[in-house]
Image 1 (tube, rainbow, N blue to C red):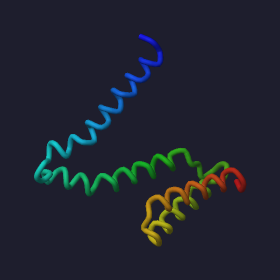
Image 2: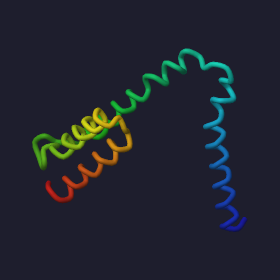
Image 3: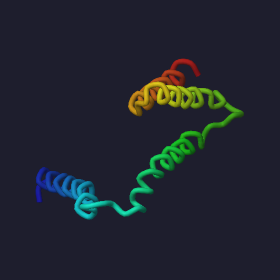
Length: 107
């Protein structure tokens, strides 16, 4: 099989599997989702955010370097922006920009 044909087939398979996975819940739960699925839909976003927060702070050392100051400032900014604007994208992009600016230019 030629290289371009192989690449196109690979992309087609990946795209169709991704689409099938995304459409599957609508086919399986046509009328109403079970209560466990509704419960997980409510609690998992908070659990994932908590895991991401722990992951972001796992390598922060309070005794060396910048002592985690850029990370704490970026997280505080994200929390404040989300409370103020209620926009996830503004919180994420703004706190990432602040963090990168602090790390590259200040600390």
